[in-house]
Every structure is written in C-alpha cells, then in structure tokens.
Length: 124
Image (cartoon, rainbow, N blue to C red; front, side, top):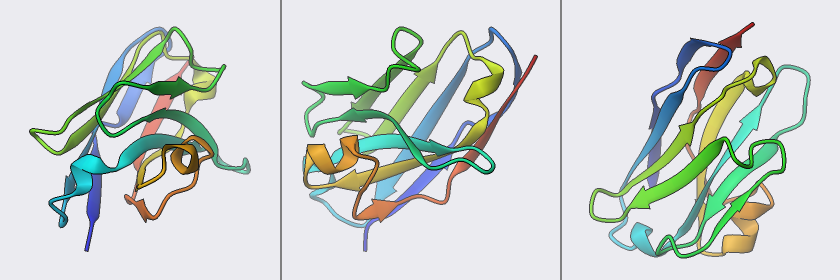
C-alpha cells in the first residue's frame, strides 16, 4: 500500500518562502510514478499546482505559481518537494501530494494515491 506523508507547511508572511516535502513508502516502484502537488482553499475547488514525471525530466506548473514555485523529486530518498517562494495570501490552502502512473493524471489534479495534506497560511 503506497503511503504519502506531507510536511513543511506553516504560517509565513507574504513574500516569504516554504519548502514542502512528501515522503513516500510502501511500493518499491513509487519512483516510477509521476507525482504532483494540489491545493484546496476554503470554499474553493481543488487546484493542480505542479506535477513532475517519474525521473524529473518534465515538469508542469499552474499559471498562478509559475516563476515562484519549483517542484522536484529525489528518487533515492523517495521524496517529492515543492519550493515555494514569493508567497502570496492567495496561496493559502491545504497542500496535498499525489502519485499516479500517468503524468497527465497528476497534471489534472487527480491521482491514485494521496497524502493527508499540510496547511500553508500566508499572512498579508
């Protein structure tokens, strides 16, 4: 059973930075999965933020985070990352990591496996 555990969320002022991590376990083939980050703010639909293919050679970003967020992964550590810079109050949401065998599925904000989420709050 694949397990995803997010960490690194918190409270930060606008303009600040946070680095989210998503530790994976339970399947030795998880390193072959595409992975991504989604977020959901109160009373809003879930939004795909960024996605990365199995070897890190291809990435996708939502227009709202391009130039500010960077997705990366370490298959040696079975960990996915999201470096978030120049944070804005509108980035406030619960951030979830997801994994799937298909990169397009993750890009669409879907996935076979999900973490429990980590709260990111950006104050103005």
